[in-house]
Image (cartoon, rainbow over all chains, first blue to last red):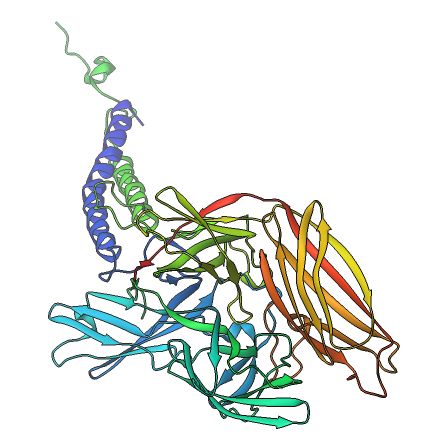
Length: 275
Length: 305
């Protein structure tokens, strides 16, 4: 092989590189454009940024609301979600959940600490309201007007959610004033007073608005009250038992437990990555 | 002049071994090799990325958080935020939530408890009169103040217990029921807890106490009826595990400056055939000796009357 051949070989190698490069650069540029299109941000306003459970979570107090799926059927649109409590709960006992339809023992981790009752969808033509049916429901439902689809939804927000907080209030009942409403949605009424030997049974009826207070106990204020006894059939009455002589004319009671508190404000929800 | 033999002409005019000729096979192979090398590089770039620096920037990916926005850490495991502050004409209520942070499992984290709460507004500080929790709302606490506050620029501060000490005290009394004990004082680490009233009956009782000075305290009591045929005691209602869905257990009180505790009977009922010959009362008091760290807790929403 002579020097001319060697030189020509080297030149030919670089000619091959240049020729292939001109094609390769075009290919790289085209694939870059495709990557840009697929990595564009989701169109709805979600809780982007920091997260605890899921990048698409909405943190409401100590509960993370995590969208799970989106379903559409005609004009119906539903978002299924999960509620994950981040509240420290070591040592929390099983509690009795007293509902108007009866008493049941529930484990701590199944309690609904948040009730995101009102959701608002914003579209180019206005807003659509929806939400779950009750605190135990985990699906927010909406009816879209004719002509709109899920793709028209600009943003989703939860507005003024209800949160479970401890409650401890005092109230009084007497023959002259047999009714009391110590907190909104909790109404108590003196039903009867029965004396049996040295015990006086004061029966009080309890009426709750929806959503019902999660947990409710009532006890007499003072020294001569025994533990209250609730109707185990869940008919909404409680017997408060006084020991000894006649109870006071105006009887003081204490209602404590867990109540729903409405927290003003809006919380954006992200469903951009859901199938 | 003689004719020259062509064969005798100088050889330098001819390449008699073929070294002057150009081999085309090798350059062609080199060109192909160069193209293959380049193609391999292009394929590698396309498959692995990253793309060209001149592409438009994308939204940063969400990052796992140690502490949620708007929360204040109380320790390595728990952070707090006040979800709502409601101020009325003569009182203020604050609803506070807490979360387990730094990736800890919430069911393994014990709820943090404040020894005291205060509100500061317009240079005025108001101390909380009560705080309470509930078994069905772990990590949540409701704090009560007996004054209204100016919500503009209000600051909520929680003070951790810091160091605490426990002291016990026993009182023996006659067995004639009902029994009333008034103004009984217990001193723990220089702090005085006053038992304003302890009323003991046949299967019932009530204790009221207050802390004379200091930050906060907790008081518990057990009343033992001696000499009975079958054991019978009175204990605080919150210390009795729920035995029936019809008689649930109230939550244990938090750090307070005053409280009243209802007592319930455990064991056999007292009767003529099971009557006590003596009564012993065992008090257990815990006091905050040195307050711990004070933390400003963010308030998310304020509601005025």
